Amino acid sequence: MRTAICDEFGIDYPIFAFTPSQHVAAAVSRAGGLGVLGCVRFNDPDELEETLAWLDDNTDGKPYGVDIVMPMKMPTEGTSVDLKSMIPQENIDFVDRTLQKLGVPPLPEGEGRDGVLGWLHSVARSHLDVALKHRPVLIVNALGSPPVDVIETCHEAGIKVAALAGTAGHALRHVENGVDIIVAQGYEAGGHTGEIASMVLQPDVVDAVGPDVPVLGAGGIGSGRQIAASLALGSQGVWTGSIWLGTEEYQNLQSNEGWTEAFTRATSSDTVRTRIYTGKPARLLKTKWTEAWAEEGAPAPLPMPLQNLLVADAHNRINASGDPDVISMPVGQIVGRMNQVRPVAEVMADLIAEFEQSVARLDEIV
Image (cartoon, rainbow, N blue to C red; front, side):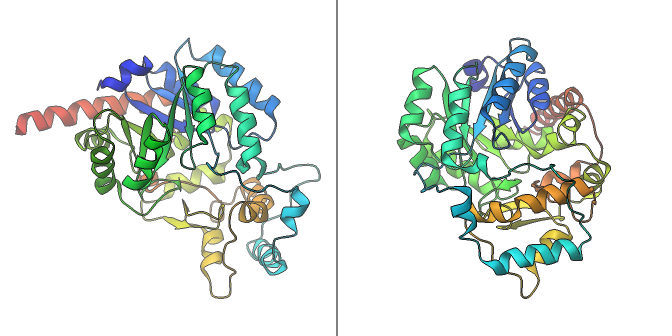
């Protein structure tokens, strides 16, 4: 399972793993892939500084990447008070009623964290500033192309830039802006995702950008067979995310019985693509929380970042409660295969072994 992108990054396998957990990212990198740390959860630059220093020291010298959320166009950012004043009272009342109806208790005094700051452009730039003090080999933007000056700064530091794309047109614009690697993310993916399924999207993107631009297939990839399919579609590697939520290392970041029960019992039909998480379409685990927003009389989700601001405290309360019927979790349709908690090294070994078996089976057919 070796492609040109392996040589470009000095990795053994073209498996890129997006994760908000530094423990997962480090374990993937140590196992021969490329762990990519999601930074949106870091409101405090000092906390990110500490986390990246930990990654520097715990990846055995292997490469890793960093994922930020930075719109290409600079949004108008006011203060938290300014933003809150833009949220309709009916939306606030709906959230309060729904939490009460679902039996979600309030957080103890002083607990919880602001879930909005990491989505702001200014904070994303601070994430980049911190990252440049460390040794990531890849900066990935989860909201299209980063600003051109950001791409140029990364290139000056010898860092490659990748961006997610949900259409061939998106991918072409990324390349025109100077992005090095395209992540073709299909409809099946968790979190923010588009409307075109991976089987159609990946060859469209590969053909559009041409042979000189590496493409990573994303969306619904959690087995060696799916990696083989992605490479057969023309991608040079895969971008994985949801599958790492079911690992032992992830429990260092998010650990409660409700969370684990929610994803281990879910099937591939138990997700929904909705705007209720951030204001942009994102795939979440289907629970009583997502169903409440689909009921008659529920308000329409607000645009980003207002929706995130509206539900940030609710998500803190929901996740702290540990109720698997209510939990708010971005996850892809691959959740149907996440039926047990395993160490990262074991997941990696299974991905590689099944890939080899799949290729051998195809060789027999040929």
